Length: 375
Ligand SMILES: Cc1cc2nc3c(=O)[nH]c(=O)nc-3n(C[C@H](O)[C@H](O)[C@H](O)COP(=O)(O)OP(=O)(O)OC[C@H]3O[C@@H](n4cnc5c(N)ncnc54)[C@H](O)[C@@H]3O)c2cc1C
Image 1 (spheres, helix red, strand yellow):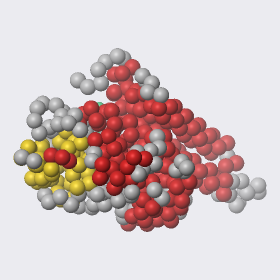
Image 2 (spheres, rainbow, N blue to C red; image 1 turned 45 degrees about the vertical axis):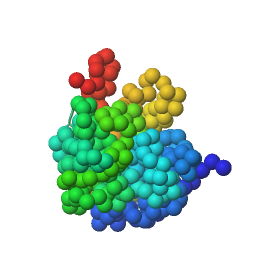
Image 3 (cartoon, protein in one colour; image 1 turned 30 degrees about the vertical axis):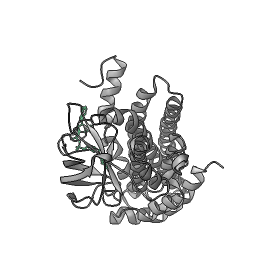
Image 4 (cartoon, helix red, strand yellow; image 1 turned 90 degrees about the horizontal axis):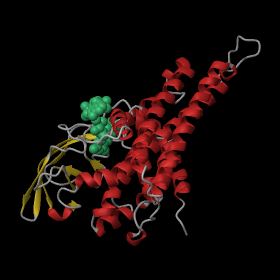
């Protein structure tokens, strides 16, 4: 019987809802939700049946992320990075690690961004030095989601040999020489534990290489980008959906007692028009998101461009919808109880996650104008 990913996400969403406020206020890793996802079989959603996974298409992972993001942005972020790492490991990792992911024993993430090349993740400046059957890694990674909880990082470096842009490695997070630098204390997604990690002479077996030496750029563009962009878009759209719902509830239930008709906020045409704009913007971005899954599934020539458009559209839509929610819910929006201020803060992250919205606007503009994306 096919695994019902949405039913699983629905049950995990209940846990996410119960813990989301504490995760945010305490900047605590969403362990209960991540464990619920593990127990519900969601870690192995993208893993092939041959290693014990569910082998579902990316669209199902998107639906899971969107549903969980409505309750807890941090949890959705942790799962997004798990699936992004899993996509690489499924294509290039060992069978034993793939089995561990499918069985829920391995939480994955990406360690791409660096203090040196910042959001230009495709151009790591960190190094890999061949040393017999091992490779020695040195790096200043600037952001790794689930820095402490991940079982291993999917790690980028310059190649050990040659002049290609990058090589990928599987680096277990307990490896000697790795140090997580401080706690994440961000404005939003406060539970995602996206901390800097320093690597000083970290030794991993050459067998931990994911793909060939120098193949990193191709894997980033062909495997990581579509997975990460479509899932982080799902996270943005889940936050945006929740903002529409919470804003409509607030507008419908908030009355002016001094007016004879005891008008609710929703009785004001201006307020209704703002809520209509929110609904329309979210539905437009969701339609593009769904269409891009179709383009990917059909291997269409425009799929790559659609992926870039979708991440930018979803991230920007979520921010715009959050801005409207803060206006419509008035002074109450500044306080925690309406619930929109946490979502407002959480929406800010996706637009600066690489590739950032501004980079995507540049890439999409170059593609439309027939110019090369890089160089
Ligand atoms: C919550 C969170 C979790 C994250 N988790 C991970 C993770 O798990 N793994 C990981 O590898 N990374 C992660 N990142 C890092 C992320 O992907 C980016 O690398 C990071 O946010 C970039 O920040 P920066 O200050 O280095 O950006 P900078 O590179 O300094 O960019 C600053 C500004 O310049 C703009 N800019 C830069 N280059 C261009 C260009 N060519 N054209 C137009 N504008 C440009 C950017 O859009 C941005 O607005 C995470 C980030 C956040 C916020």
